[in-house]
Amino acid sequence: MLNVFNVEFKSLRELRLALGYTASMSEKAIIQSYGSIEKMIEQKTGLTDLDQISAKIQAMRDNYRKTGTAVPAQTVIDKSVMTVLKAVYMQTPENARANVIAGVAAATSENAEDLTKRVNAFIS
Picture 1: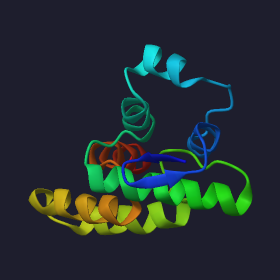
Picture 2: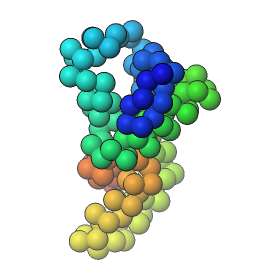
Picture 3: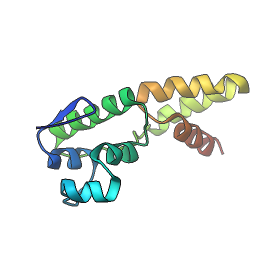
């Protein structure tokens, strides 16, 4: 058993596959590349808040166990959700838009800065 960010994985292999890494990497190789397993996860998820990381990797682990496939570390918000988010975002005063993004980011375990970039790209 491997416990990372308070989430248990059956093995390092399960962790790697849940995160979407297909290449076999030993713990030593991960430490050489990233500094630690935790740093690898932070880089892959793009998150720094421990609670968000824990929730994200738990969801990724659960999805992997159910489907046998990994989901992208950055949650893909489908086009219909982006369309609704765009409408809300455009109708919200500019000084309150950060609150809209923060709420959606928290609900989807996304990074708020990345989500802001995606919304702005979707609007253009």
